[in-house]
Image (cartoon, rainbow, N blue to C red; front, side, top):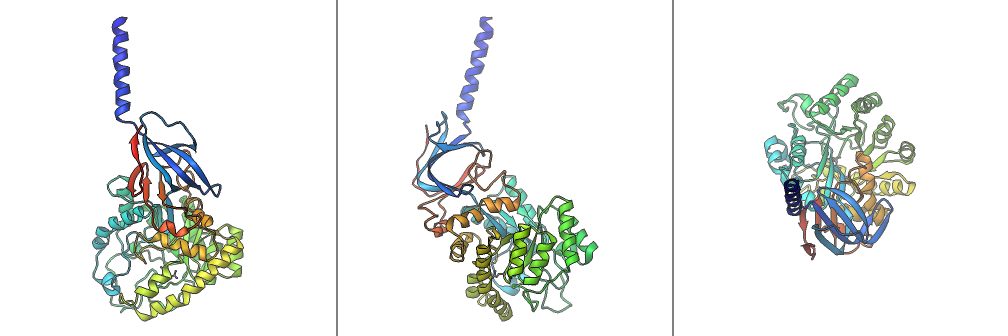
Length: 439
Ligand code: ARG
C-alpha cells in the first residue's frame, strides 16, 4: 500500500512539474478594452487565454498561477480587425502590362506570404479574400499554409476565382482576340448561363472556396468601357446565389452600378462590394434584405495618385474619377439610412498592410469611430458567419487580440498604427512598453 501511495505521489509531482513547464495560460491586463458588442470602452480588464482560446474576460479576475502575463495597462486593447475585401495574392499595381503579361502564377505565389504577413502585422487577424487575379488557387494554398502554421498571416475565407461573364470585369479585356490565357475558362472563373454559373460555383467549391464572389457589374481596373453596367442577368445572379446556398456558402457581389446593385441584392447576396452608384431604391432594398455594404472608400486616393505612374491606361484612371467621390457620398447616405456596414478595403489595389487607412474615411463619411470599429469586428464577423469565433474579446472566441497607444474611439487614425498583435494566442508583434513576466 505504501509503495502504491509513494508511486502515486511521484506521478502527481511529475504531472505538476510538467504543467509548470508547459503552462498554456496567458493573461493580458488591458488598461482599456474596446467591447464592440456593447459599443463601449471598458477599463482595467483581465483577459485569460488558454492556449489559443479566450476563457474569461472581466475586471479584477484572479490571475492563475504560472500564467504568462502581458501587461497592456497603458494601452487600448481591441479584438483583431477583420477586412472583408482583400486580395492577398494580388500585387498592388506595379506595372500594368508587366503584371498582366510577364508574371506567372508562381510570381504571385512567391510574394503572397509577404502580403499576408504585412496584413497580420497591421492588426488584421482575419480576412475575407474575394478573388485571385491569376488562376492556380494561390489563395487556397495560402489559407492552408497559414492554418497549418507554416506561414504567418490572417485567418482567411477565400473566394478563389471571381465568377464573371465573358467580357466582364473578370475577363481579359482591351486586347487582341489572338491573346488568350492558356488555361481552361473554369480556372479563370469565366462562366455564362444558368448551367454555366452553377457549374462554376461547384468548381470553385470543389477546389476550396469558402465564399462565392461574382461580378454583378463592370469595374474600374479593367478595360471594358462601362464601370456600372450589369454583367449578368437577374436569372444568372439568382442561380449563383442559390447554388452557393445549396453548398452552405454565402455569396457576395462586385457591384458599382445602381441597377446591378439592386439585382445582386434581389438575388440574395450577403454583401454588396463597392456599391458606388447605390441609389435610394437600392438603399431601401439593402435595408429590407439586411444586405451588408462593403465599400472600399480609401482605394480612390491611391488609384488617383499612383496608377498613371504605374502605366495604367488613362481610361481606367478616368473611370476611377467617375466612381471615387460618388462612392463616398453614397456610402454616407447608406450609413445615414441605417444600411449594415462591414469593413472591406480591396487591399491589393493599394499596398497590403495599409488597410487601417480606411477608418478615417469611414468616420469622415458618417460613422462614429465606434461604429467604424464595429464594422471591422462584430459586423465583419457576422458577415463571415464567424460570430462564434472572432470579432470580440469574449469567452470561447479565438485569442485574436490587438492593442494600440491612445484611444481609437477619440481618434480612429490610431488604428493605422497597431502596436501589438496576437493571433490564435501567439504574439506576433509587441511594440508597446509592456512587461512580459511570469507571476
Ligand atoms: N476592384 C475595383 C474595380 O476595379 C476597384 C475599385 C476602386 N475604386 C473605388 N473607388 N473603390 O472595380
